[in-house]
Length: 141
Image 1: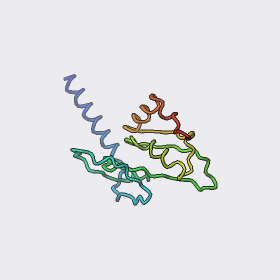
Image 2 (image 1 turned 30 degrees about the vertical axis):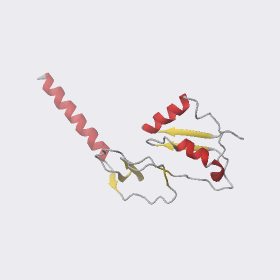
Image 3 (image 1 turned 135 degrees about the horizontal axis):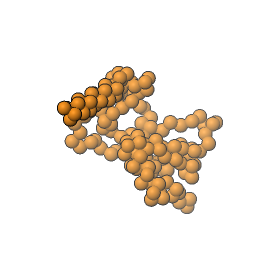
Image 4 (image 1 turned 45 degrees about the horizontal axis):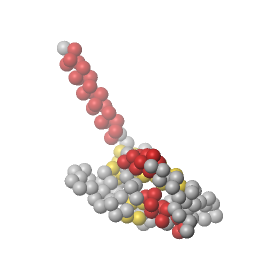
């Protein structure tokens, strides 16, 4: 009897978590991203779930991204300080290199680049930091 009650309780908790995750989520069309730069990472081989976009708490949110991009969000040139933050939500394996390559074009000081990652992007950020690659500066030759 005790085992049955525990199983029922776990089932109810799992059901509540699933319902809570779907609350307030409304499907939307993928936004236009004219400034997005394809990273050329290819699709996700064997992906079962399709890329989906939805509004959650009035914010556009995506799941199961199939085509990785980098979208620069640049300040007004009069307010630019040269600092940059790369936000890698789920990957970003080549983002740091791309930002450094385009630093002059975008007005980025390569000694003032930070990185923040989520999911696989967190692992990329951690790996770059542990291996000293976030602090490594490009040659000034």
